[in-house]
Length: 433
Image (cartoon, rainbow, N blue to C red; front, side, top):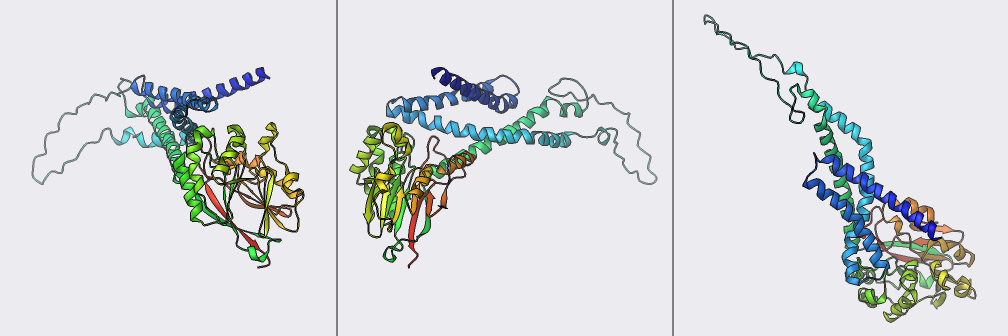
């Protein structure tokens, strides 16, 4: 097993190294005229970037001092996002490079016949003597700067200067596109999630509960990168919607209570008429689920660990994440739902959308989930879509409806591209109303 792990690690490192060599070649070597300060600085960037990323991962997993995790996390994880979009932009550049080269060749090439042997004709007034013709002078052919040889402009236009110009155009455009994409995606996360509103009709919901509003928030991912200020934005946004109930459906944190307890403190300010409820996500089991379950209880939320509570008009249930199975704390649908009255409507909190199939078997009317981030970084949505029955939004499975939030925060790079963060207000609608 250890040998297999080492082999996989070597393959990953080799692929990562090859990718960085390719990016260095296209963005640094091919865009500089020769060895010098710029090339040395560029090489340093492509060496330091991956080292910072691996250091950030190691410090987080190894329990390094929290201040060190914070110092390494920002540049390390942002580098990962930047590498993704540099690679995509450069691949597009490879397709466009021949087109750019052809355009540059046409613009720089000047036909010799249009510039050689042309003399100015001066009109002579009637009766005046014609001026003596000046002896023709033969100008010395211009020397090209790079080759040092005499000749016409055409060879220089197709030589190294043209290749350098094309590389700078393609490389500079790729770098600008990648930096702009990552910058805007990071701004989108730090700005805070936007509110979505979804109406979900439930056949068993009594008329008196029509319009009941549940604020659904998932995947906040408090971490060395996303801290207390972000948590406060999430809390303020949720409270602004004035929900009847708040559902935190997993992946609240990436770290220990001792490090992230202060960041989670604003969650104590959550306000809803029927309270706030919490279920674990897979990252809670990486971070220590038991300590966080106890801590969210101290913050005023009610953990639903394979449990159910009866509200006026419907049942609210919650199950643990499937990652808890390794610790003997996995989802137990029978415990949460086995003895309930199926004539009542039931809303289930379950972190991962894949839990929908058991929800259908147990007669759940609506499952609220997160986990997918909507893919977070395009084109990651295609991968996430293959791994989950629903990537984002509302879908129906038999008599059960599933709503998946894209989440409020981000894991790894604090960046989202093509998958904006959200807090969703789910309004339950009675068909009897």
